[in-house]
Image 1 (cartoon, protein in one colour):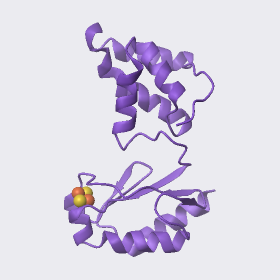
Image 2 (cartoon, rainbow, N blue to C red):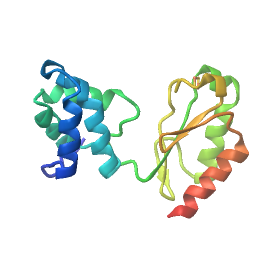
Image 3 (cartoon, rainbow, N blue to C red):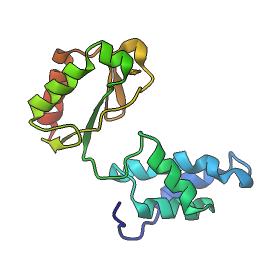
Length: 165
Ligand code: FES
């Protein structure tokens, strides 16, 4: 992970964060980490080391506490993944209902392998269960869930994202 220039929250965000912090007793400042990291990610599309340092500073906690959260949850990106991210779940329920075919189709359509990007679309590492097994096979596109995904739907979504530019 590369370090970027020092980061400062905007005045608006400082107000939002301070209001959020008041929901928890001071000794539970860590309870605000996810909220603050969402703010960071919303600004840039991913979380940098400087975001994590600024989060630790504004919450009055250790950097490692922020780092552990930012790197644990798949909803947070710690690399620049670009504007559009597709994550196809390949865990057991989705695999049994055809997720491997979806992955193969996406790779072929985009001309890349999982973990690469093309046409402003990043095909993210295969996901473990994304907790929507009842709608298998499913995928996440820019943090939105799609269930009972077919090749046709995947094709349509890739086409829409490509056209967005
Ligand atoms: S196995 Fe894909 S959502 Fe659970």
